[in-house]
Every structure is written in structure tokens, then in C-alpha cells.
Length: 300
Image 1: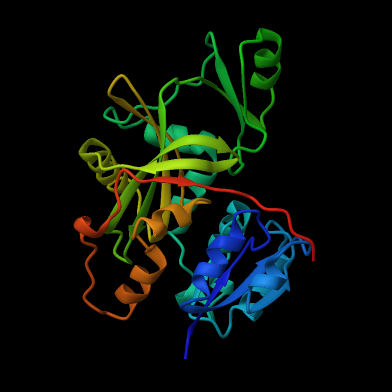
Image 2: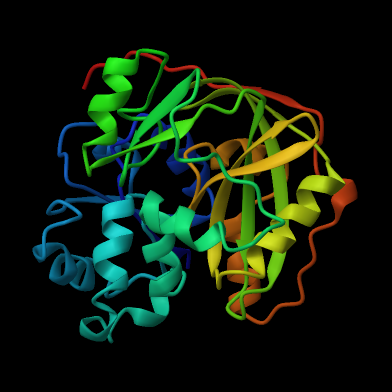
């Protein structure tokens, strides 16, 4: 019998390919606050959920997740509300693939994130200051939504006064997403960097790479916070300096790229949870491979 997994935000544009892959090995239950989409077509079961920041989401998840083996939340607001209400979720606590509440709280709030990591001299961060070119982001947000770059002082001054946004110096360099997996003890199991060559909210074209300097940096980051499960780290490299941009304590939107490179964090996590000795061999990883994402139009 197939193991059952629950995936939230299942109607996202990136999800059909991931869900089709997962269904080869698992019985997939999808949820989404938006009922319109392809999840009903691709998932074995689909349920419309309350919004992730709605208190009703807690009881919803407990009910739908009662008979699954693992629960993966894709939306940051869902991570936030669930991590703050774990005491109400005794029936599914051991099924939630979730970093500890402190980690999620720091990673989900860009101001808290900056305050926490600026205490470490060996970790570079973009400065919260006006520069020749600035990047403006929501204080709490996911993907690249509502993020823009500007040199306009009037716009910069306006958003510096808005408590819901942050203004940072723009770091020009190569951007990478690093897909990581951690066990229940917070130990890094494996990490795979991917250069983001073209992105439109999510990565459209990416290239997996092998980079010892990035590997060392990820180990440094993981010594500062306690992670569990899939995590993705966003970095920029400028003149051999690594800048930490953000950490998302969940599966990345482009995790399918890593899976196609032979790094499957979900399959590996099941092996770990079943106490099966499992090792990811670097020789099996497809480094220096280009991956292209294409969206197709369908009618249902």
C-alpha cells in the first residue's frame, strides 16, 4: 500500500509536475485555499482549505491530515499558524514535517531574520539602507511577489516609512537556491545548490552545481537555527562573497529540479523516518545540468 502524503498550495502553477511525480510512489492528498486549478485532476484527493492565516485552518489540517503519513506545507502563512498552535494538533504532530516554531518565526519575518543573523560576523547580509539601487520587499511574503528594484528616491522614501515593507541595498551577483534536507536532530543530510538563471516568481531555468564554498556556508547557517525536513536557502554570490538573502523552512517551489538531479528529499525523509540506513551518494547527483520549466495551457 502506498504511503499517504498531504501537500498544501496544490493549485499553484508549479504543482502539476511535482504531484505527477509524487503519485508514482505516494497517495497524494492536495489542499488549497483556492478551489480553482488543476489539483482536482492530478491529486488522488483534493480539499479546499481555509486561508493559511485563518484560525480555522488548524482544525481543517487536523481533520484532513488524520490518515496521512507526512504533511508538507508550502505556504509560509500556514507554517506560521501551525507552528504557533502545535499544542492543539496532538493527533498529527508527528506527521508534520516542520522546523521548530522559533526557526519558522525568524525565517518568515524578514526584519527578525536580519536582526538574528546580523549578530554573526561571518554571515553577510544586504544592509537595510538607501543605496544607488534598492530592492523593496514585503516584510512577510513568499516567492518574488510584490518585490521590485528601484533607484527612485521618492519610492524608496515612501516604503521606508511603511512597516509592512523593507528596503535593502540591491546586491548584484549570481543568485542561487540551495535545496537542503535535515533530520529530526537538525543534522544536515544533504544540500544541492542551483543557480537561478531565469526566474518569474519561481525559477524557470536553473543549473545544478557543485560548490564547496556554498556547502560550507550551508553548514554554518544550519549551526545557528534548528531545522527539520526540507529547507531552501536563497543566496547571492558577489565577488566571492556569499550574501544570505532568505531561508524558507519548507520545500522550494522548484524542488522538482533537485528531484530530477537525483536528490529527492521526500523519499530520503521516509527512509530516515523508517530507520533505514540511507546515504545520498554525490556520484549519483546530476551536477551541471540545466533544467527548464515550461507552462502549458489546459482547459478543464
